[in-house]
Amino acid sequence: MRVLFIGTGEIGVPVLRSLLNSDEHELVGAVTQPDKPVGRAQRIEAPPIKQALAGRTIPILQPARIKSADAVAEIRALAPEVIVVMAYGQILPRSVLEIPRVACLNLHASLLPRHRGAAPVQAAILAGDRESGITVMYMDEGLDTGDILLQSRLEIAADETGGSLHDRLALIAPEALLAALTQLGKKSAPRIPQDSSAATYAPKLEREHGRIDWSEPVVTIERKVRAFNPWPGAFTLLRDEAGAERKLKIHRASVVADGRNDPENLVIAAKDGALRLEEVQLEGKRRMSATEFLRGYNTPVRIA
Image (tube, rainbow, N blue to C red; front, top):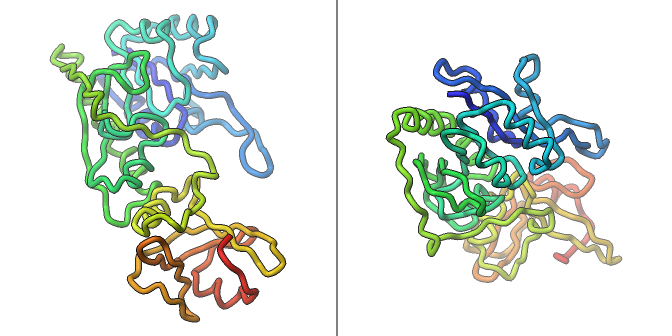
């Protein structure tokens, strides 16, 4: 089948490559977000999907707004039979959803209807879920509300981070999509309505969401450290005797029963326990073990 891929994030790259290498399907083009400034230097950088197509002759569209008349016309001109969307970042209008002859599919990084929205990977860890997966669904105009075609599941490890779960989901997504396309080709693909009463939502994350609230249960805080690694990053604020505040990013931590500190451990009390910080990064400094941090940072501080 003629397939158009629409996506932006790194998680969609393995799916894109599987379509490029497929003998059964033709990748007729890709739609991704415009290039944008990245990092402190604000260098203009292409999104991962565009980078993955470097050196290929595949048409790449980068509309600022996919619902614009010009963008819709360009997509229609590619005559896709199936549109596949994964981590694009814009809502597709009906004018685009109606273009493909067979289906418009979305690959969502959760087991819908759980964790609809922009940050399902982090949400699954935050919630303490035992499993996650990829849902292939038929797109409609709602937010991840379409009928389910199939789901591919995996267990969430006890030490899972947002980064590791993202990468594992990216790896199982191609097989899920190719299975869905095979079913569509055989006209045997099911349409399973979602149970909206069981839906949860995972809104877009901002940097400030990573700030630790030490009045929360310690298990909740430990999950946040893992879920927000690497983005948006869990952190706390340290305040010195002069009142100056600096951000301390927490890369790795574990729950401990005893909240007492000692010279070799950085332990912070929470609502019902304590968290031992194991790997941290003080604002403006390199990433280091908590032991290194304690040895090198002798100024008295308290949690802001």
